[in-house]
Length: 193
Image (cartoon, rainbow, N blue to C red):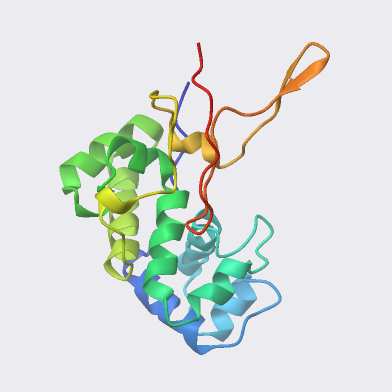
C-alpha cells in the first residue's frame, strides 16, 4: 500500500503571510486564484498555496472554506492549525508522532517514500510542512488522544481520513478504528481476533 502524496507549495515562505491574512480578511465564498490576488498574492506560483489550504482542511476539495477556516480566525488559531496539520499529514504523524520537532533528514525520508517527485519536490514538501508548523501549536505526544486504540494493535492514522464501512455478506461490519473528539470519551472496542 503506497502512502498518499503530500501537498507542497512552490512558495513555502509565503505560508505564514497567507495564514495571517486569513485571520484579517473576511471569509470568502471560495478560495480561488482571484481571491488570492485580491489579498495580495499575485505571483503565478502563489496558486500552489491553495492546495495547502485544502490539504489541511481549511477549504474543501472545491475551495470552499470549512468550519476549520472559521475556527482558525479565533483565539485558538495556533491549536486549530496544529490539529489541521496533524490530520493533513496523518501518515507522517503515524511514523513520527512528534513530526513537528523532527529533523530535515527524518522528514525527507518519510516524504521521499510517498512522493514520485525529485529532490526539489521533497525539499519544498519539507519546507511547506516546517513553515506550517512554525505558526502552529501541538499538544505534547503524551497528551494526544485523537486516536485511542483499545485493541492493543496499532492502526495507522491515515485510515482516519475516510473511514469506510466494510460489507461482509448480508451484514455490515463497523470500521475497526475511530476518530475521537477531545470532549467525547471513546467507545470500548472489542479486541480483534
